[in-house]
Length: 97
Image (cartoon, rainbow, N blue to C red):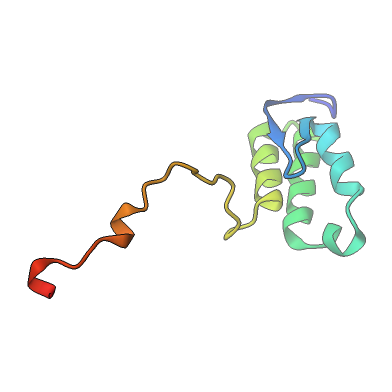
């Protein structure tokens, strides 16, 4: 493989852009501020990108590494706008009155 290898599914960025190849992902990481770039999730992402591009590593690991760095645990990726929250606002039952 090479740095021009495309991801099976492009990675959507929080700002609306997308990363289509390993090279796009590598350039994205290098443009990050130094403090962010040196954080563990981004270092892991860069490691698996290098493994995929230069050592025939699994490209899916590179994709997952980028996704974990972009969307750390606790950060929701998907917000459902039509989620039914009616159960939260139920009225008291007759036995509870």
